[in-house]
Image (cartoon, rainbow, N blue to C red; front, side, top):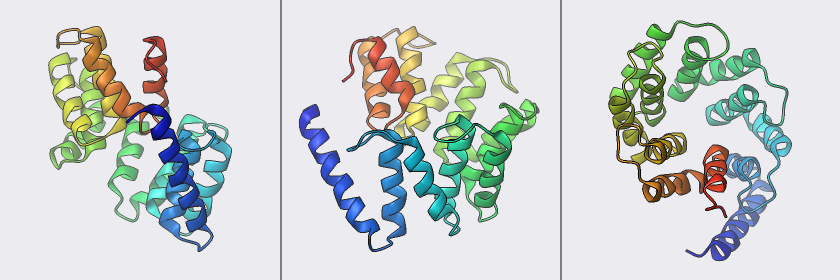
Length: 218
């Protein structure tokens, strides 16, 4: 689809979601927040995204709690706070949300709170083996950087591919990075761009930046 046509479709989707929120449709609000966060069909607005996420997270919607936690983790639309991020992830995890639990493990194991990388890797592996795309990305990430396991680009690519093929935008971006720089795969810019675009189309800023660097965005 041509980019201008795609942008028109995204704008129509945004208007539809905006109308749906007037009927207090929770799922519509969640997706509307995603549009604001990623600049899909509307100007990117992290502050507005946080406002919407918070509104539905306070109602106990676990997906919104995870999304709000990610905003605090990355400092998008709010002051960065790993502690507050973990608080929201914990609320989601208490509702058996697997992504919430994995985010907690990541922050405590490989992120900015404390470091117990080997234990974190064990948790990620368990989730990855159950088919969770975020867990698969984390296993690939650990193999790539040697967090809690011996660095191994081949295994990193294997798990990043599993994640990417399930549509995980972070996995797609990181798999593209492996192709761009030839990390245990033949260096292939076209394939890198293919995965970057899949990730960028879901609003992942790192992928957009990578495409800009390659002169392929928009």
